[in-house]
Amino acid sequence: MQPEDMDNVVVEDGIFLKDLIRAIKNKDQVRAQALLRSLGSGKYRYSASSPDITNIDSKINPIGYRVSANIVDPAFLGTKGSLPVSDVNFASTRTGYAQPSPKGLGSSKAQVTPLKRAALMYALGDAISEWPEKTAYEITPSDDRRARLYRMKTKGAFAPVPGKTDIVGIRRKQDVFQPRVEKGRFGKQVQFNPESLKQDLVNMAAGRGLAAATRQLLPAKARMAAEAGLMIDDFLRSVTGKGLSDVYREASDRFTESDGYYAVP
Image: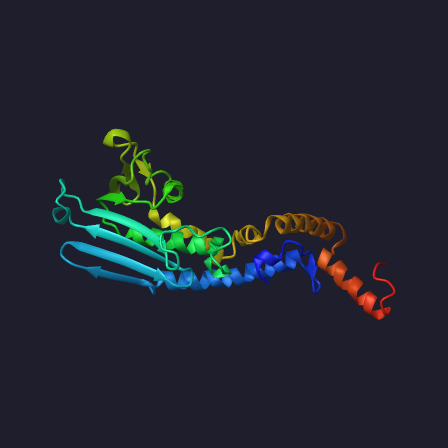
């Protein structure tokens, strides 16, 4: 069953939404564990170096994204200063830099699910961690949404400047970044460790936070029904020791045994 089919679903074949969410959660945990193993082993990563440029490229087919980072010698760019210049970017393997719609482009595979987003953040964190400890950086977001994503996920280390196309700054230590702000001045130093971007996928692989993430896959009406069902189920279980699925199963058994005459005790 696809998430878009769930708007009017409360029970199907005796499975309540809580059981459905649990099944999706377990499936996503297995996927998260597989992605964590693959990304952690460098399965999708390819590096190429020359005297002037180092390129780190990861084409992550299971989530449909490619993450790239470059580290360039300043002499090659003809820029002032002695620090290398680093960048990072990502693109969909299906749509390039175009932003997929919330419901995807023609199939569920195009949807940016919480699990795909967590794996993408892991790969971005991995790529930024490959930068030299001291480096200038110059990042060109493809649109305003991506610029906001960079700012939010890096705690402001990659902060867009109004009216400017590029995000620029200096990485002064492994976890200390200083972005440039208006008029090219340096802003405040920001404490940000790129490894922190990996944490969402690590949590999902451990089963933490998956219930909430799974509910976000449901359409609004189904999500409200799921939330209500979970509250009722928890209340019933705390009072009677039986949840909604237990009550439904017992009623179904009684209905079958009585040749369909009654289902409620």
